[in-house]
Structure formats: C-alpha cells, structure tokens
Length: 96
Image (cartoon, rainbow, N blue to C red; front, top):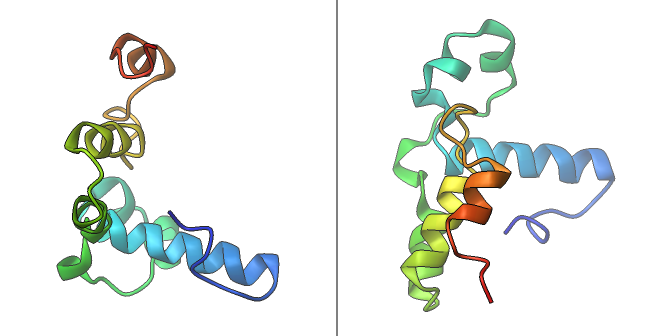
C-alpha cells in the first residue's frame, strides 16, 4: 500500500510512509499515540477526514470486503486489538 508513495532516500521514504500510515489510521484520535508526548511529537498534522481512505480506495478497485477487513484487523494500530498470527491463521482466510 505504501511502496510507491515517495521517492528519495530511504529516510525520506520511511518518513513519508510513517506519515501516511499515521493519517490513514487517524493516530491522533487514539490515546496510545495522542497522550504520549514522544509519540505525539512524531505524528504529522491531524487529517481525520482522510482516515481509512485506503479502505475506500481498495473497495473502489474491487477488492473484496473480506480482504479489506483482514488488512484492517492485521494493521490495527492498537497492539491489543491487532490480529495476532494465531488469529490470522484461525480466521480461515489463508485456507487453500
């Protein structure tokens, strides 16, 4: 999802990806990130109107909702809410 959003050095690409993910998952709205001074200082400016637009873009491209939901669960920015490896395997999504 983020491999082509920036050009330049590895540091520039890393920063662009980090910023895009912070906006995509609206990290400013999550206490884990917003209430921690060090984490908050690393966040780009808040843009809540852009949160989860990646999911909308995937839907517009015809990606099935089940696929998007698995990504959302796997990429959840809250560690306690994020799918674990066991949960991913038990979800049946990867069954052949």
